[in-house]
Image (cartoon, rainbow, N blue to C red):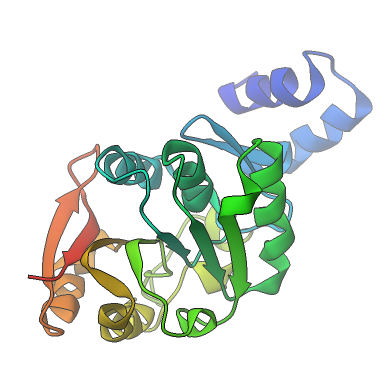
Length: 241
């Protein structure tokens, strides 16, 4: 029994090999991601449910979100843009005890999942609001102290593992020939929605991190590439000069 099978057996079935476990074991064998088979993914101590099959939160994202939240005032107004499961926003609700947190997501099927993750982790729902729509559109002229985004950024021609492309949503993965289609739009719209002392953290493709950074610089913003726990370019940190 490999690690994923053991985790599935212990976590979902309490160590008992039921007929349902055998079915799930076959799902794993076909390449379906463990998070979808179990139904949730850990993220900064939270249990993030994946009922609507959003993008599965990665350890690399978890790493930079932790860095972000460690250095943010508790009263910051936060936007989790391209929220998917809402993992980033839920972490902000927990770690920033006075922060209003907004979730922006284009796919309406994920709204119920985000709400479930807020409730299941006993987070303060009175500080949370989910809005469905294209990027910043649902937020009008609102400004935020923190904008955290894990947008689709993979070039459309890149070959990924079947466990990713066969199961995870293409809408959350791919963004044009160079992977920067959505990043271009975020860079243009960001200055209207970031407070003067605010910061945006935007996850990016390792191969296109310099090009992603230049998109923000072209908008007269300061932009810094930061590496993840594996020393791989992972996120652009953006602010006003």
